[in-house]
Length: 172
Image (cartoon, rainbow, N blue to C red; front, side):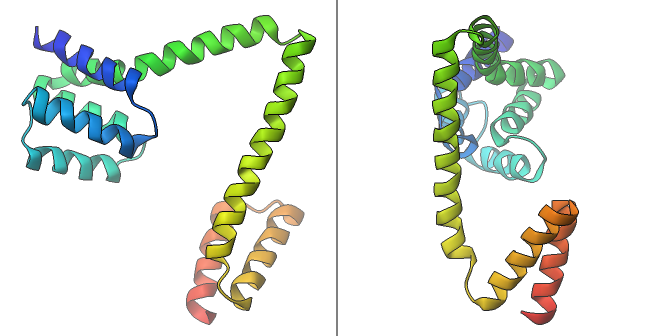
């Protein structure tokens, strides 16, 4: 019975929580510390810390660790599947709809507008980050050289990031 309760709890979390991992953590805490006292507040905070350190989405990591702590491997699998199941179903429905409608003229028009919207959102994020990230002329020069190297020579962004950090530490 505990396994069904765990699955149902994390299914609700996956279905009704929006806003990313940190927003979901409040709902997870409400469920696993207060509604179902499976963990103490201290244990929950430890799981949050571990979830932040491990690769992957924080909510899925937290669900996996909480499930394992309460119900072993089966609990871990059920909690993880419960939290991702709603997103999986929604994406499956979106994909099926897209495949059926992609040749319709009105649908193509909607996606053309969505591309413009996405470009606008990316530009807005760039403007917000750019104003904080570019503090002085040195930052502008490092950014410009990195952008040029990435675009012209197709250099790996990871290596550019490391190189920019080293240049910043040595000369910035």
